[in-house]
Image 1 (cartoon, one colour):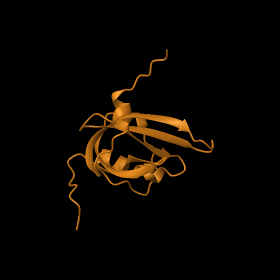
Image 2: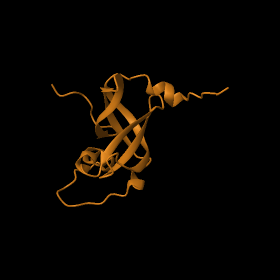
Image 3: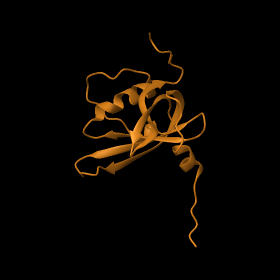
Image 4: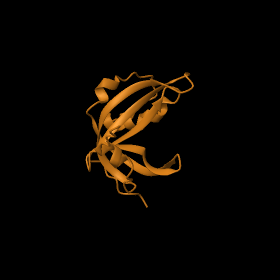
Length: 127
């Protein structure tokens, strides 16, 4: 007989949170070769303060500009037009606010990170 183990993260991954801003900690960044083997994905895991769930996002080496809002939220500074290098190890443990939205993945609703702000930044929508 086979035993299936379902973790807390497995259960939480099946439940979507309301779209909103959530405090989170960057807990892991793994570099993985993309499916087409032509680029690298930085698989970045954030653990939400509200319930401990992990939410992953991906920054691709061919579109590193997508990581700028995250790096700016961590550093609290706007990046200038200079080329920069950023040690991903220094991002682990950093706290930010992540904006979760709903997205469709393989026919089901999932949470997706859409944006980042520094901890304590005003998340009130501008009208």
